[in-house]
Every structure is written in structure tokens, then in C-alpha cells.
Length: 311
Image (cartoon, rainbow, N blue to C red; front, side):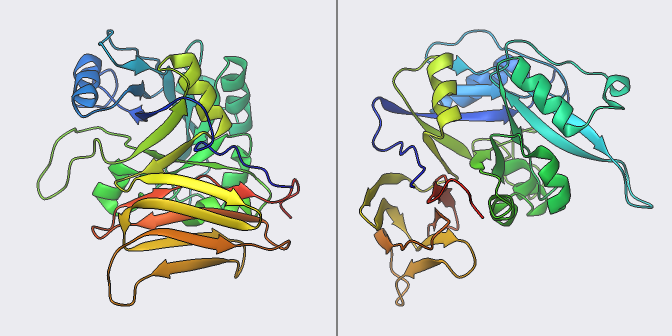
């Protein structure tokens, strides 16, 4: 049975947003209002300030909608000789902040925190699993999350540890459905030394009936979005056993699935492509589509599942 809410079939319009950014309320370099202004000036329609263990909402700006967010770190045991390790969760769409102190988090598990997020009407996203050096067993503690960050601008620009597509596949292949989010996790908001800026580098394009916090959040919950660091995904159709994707000009289009399932499209002469069709069969478990342009920038669809039980 096909399980996929196709955002390209839905009503409404596309809206661009980021739901993981930091401000001077915790460890960011700009004030909440400055961050909101910067994203609005760069064409963003919605924003989530996910400061550490604190709910922060900027002042209203015309054309900008705020999704209440908060980043919560949950301690894990450390490897000998290393600093304390944490699982970081982005709480999205919460009705009130968690505001947990280090003492309050001492005896909490990721499952406990995810439950608290859901009790506040929100959903949890597993943040930057690559940089957090999470094992699959540690990620499985977060199976109540709606998804994970397949891309994190801050850690990509800092350490080349922002792309977590392997972590994403690992979770799906353990029977844990996961949406994939591209987020900034911005802190500095400017080029620094020889590093690129950590803002406006990754975003989600959400299909929503209106630009309201409720409608945007409900579309996110349903997976009615795709993620990008540059390329545009223009259309996705499923006709019988054929999946066709149309994109802005890119170097490669990859259909990723379980084991040897999937296909990789490119031109041998190095030219660009903007469409690809993949034929699947009854043995397919899931397929997600990933495209990469000539500058190495990427875009991802959410997974298309072919059965209720992923095993």
C-alpha cells in the first residue's frame, strides 16, 4: 500500500521557511527581531526561533509567520575522555515552552522529552545527528520524532558534518518513518574567517492553504514539504508503478531505497538534467529522491513508502 502525502497534489501555495535558528537570547549573535528581519529580507515566509531550552517569539513583521520552537538537549553518557554528549531535539509548534533546567533533565530520557513536546501540541525533530555522533541505537531512542535534520547549515559550514542522509536511511530501515528537514541552526549570521555564513543555507518549502502558523504546522506534520539548499523540486507524480520528478537544472537525480533498490540519473557528458522517471516493483520498501546541482547544492523529497510495515 502506497503511503505518501504528495505536496505537489495538494491545494494551496508554496511557502519558504526555516525552523531552527538561534538568537542572542541564548548563543546567537543577533537579537530575535534582527533574525526575523534578516530572514524576511531573504524571502522567507515563516520562521522558528529554536533557542536552547527557551521559547522565543520575535515581534511581528509583515509577511512573516512564526512557528513556536525550542531546542532541547537531553544528556547521554559520554565516551571516556570526551565532553558530555547530548541528543538535541527541536520542539516545533509547541503551545508553551519546556524551559527545562539542567537539573530537571538529569533523569529525563529522549522519550520523556518527546512526550512533553507532544503534550504541548508540538512535534519533535532530531537535530544534527551527524555532528552529535549518534549511533543507530541512540537515534532509536528518538523514534517518536516526526523526522530528523537531513541538512544542518551551521555544522556543514563549520565541520562538513551537516548532511545526514545516511542517518535518515538507517532510521527508515529500522522501521521508523522519518521526514527529512533542511534547517540552518544559524548562530553567527555572517561570513567568518574563511567560512560561509550559517544562515539562509537550508530551508523547507511547505505546501499550505494559507500563511498561518496553524496551516503551516499542519502541513509540516503531514509531510507536505520538500527540503533544499538550492535546487527546486517542481513536480512529483506517481502513475502506476512510475515515479517522475521534475526539478530545476541539476547534475544528478538519485532515487534512494533499501539495499540495492533505487537508481541514479546523470549525463555522462556532465550536462544538466531536469527530470527523471523510476519504475518500482512490489519488492520496494521505500524510495526518497535526492538531487544535486552543479554547485553541489542539494534537495530532498520526503520518503515514499510502499507498505505499512517497512520490514
